[in-house]
Length: 204
Ligand code: MLT
Image 1: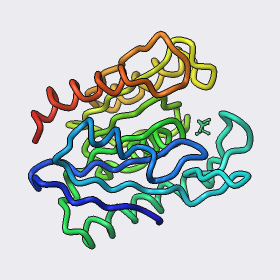
Image 2: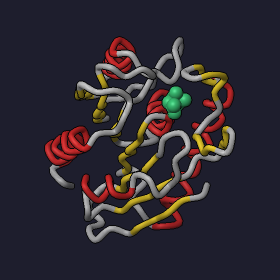
Image 3: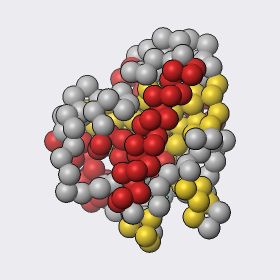
Image 4: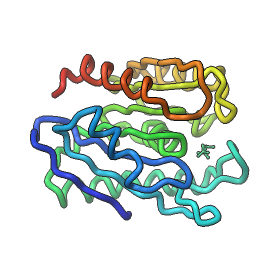
């Protein structure tokens, strides 16, 4: 997968895997990684699917209606890419935190829905429930931060609560942060994500 790798100054820190929203690129979330942890490795990935020229991480049939077969295929593709990238860049495969926005948050959530060992935690900005009707792996010791908007036209507040509930049922630790805004990624939710990251991983 097309990506950027930036080696961090402190190899005891997690590697932040950045996953952009629809129509974005691997450049988009670099400033956010810099805010979350300027010392961490950064692996920023571009989605392999194009929708009218806009990069995405998996196909959809309509807005908010996902192509499940492609979602499963692309989730595996990303999982395998993380394996290969960790080996290539010599980073700790077990110390990866995904940071995703919108479509990127959805594929990060899908990694957690399908694999017990894909990532150690996630910062999900405006995720949706990626799939329903499957049993999640046991997500004990996984830490998940969700930022949601009370007026998000793409993801309702009920859906954000449902996602939190599903992760908690799978034994993950979830923090749900609300913004009185829509689907946009705000600087105040990034600040909240940073506080959560520092409190949860103690910067390590
Ligand atoms: C998706 O397709 O993943 C969601 O609708 C969010 C987005 O617009 O990317």
